[in-house]
Image (cartoon, rainbow, N blue to C red; front, side):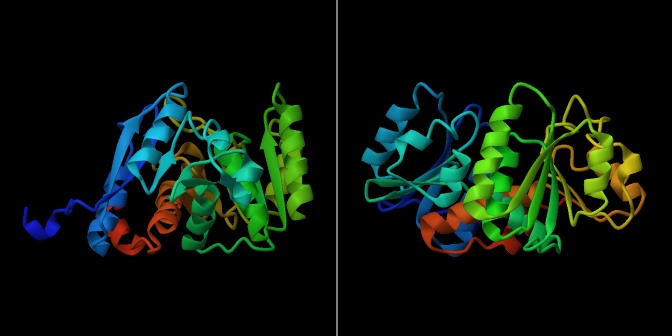
Length: 292
């Protein structure tokens, strides 16, 4: 390997990092370090396995070391909220932080997961402002999508989830987002096929934000394939496998589809810009790290 391909570490190199449990599988270090090398920026991005119990001490250590910022993955996104000095609107509304900016000891908590989704939809050719969205699921990823979509001006979001113990808290959360943003948000039972069919028949994009389609359920879809139709754009935020059963069913009848791979890219790009003040060279990153 030539020296031009090596990232330089100097006495002034600022640290960026990922905190989570586990983190060994993460593509974030490769993505961010590649971006720093391409832009000749003096940062290095590392990954650290950190439990919830050790998070407060880890954060204090990072502040003392002068780390410029860090990402958080499961199970730390909610636990980071009380440890910051300031929250962006998206982080406050979602109650989740996946990005921290260390501004000379003052910690700003942000969530870029929803930004990642919205930018990946734009990349796929869909501007969702003033449009309708059908969203399957109401977990952490879905909540971030709801918040950012509402903040960005999506007209209506129709959320479908199981009618289980978290139904009431989800209702309260979605009502709060609607009141704060003015976006029309509904909550309906994902097992109500009639309601789901009606919403899908009038939406601009169907998004799966559940884990249905991941191993071991790779041959299961959250939607009856009979509800799909050729003009319906379909997104599954799962990217392993690259083609879930939902996407295979949709593609088989001619639906335009995309997965969550670029959501990962664009949420990282938003974090990168917040830390460095530079736009991540996403097209180059796509070519080198995100080729299918």
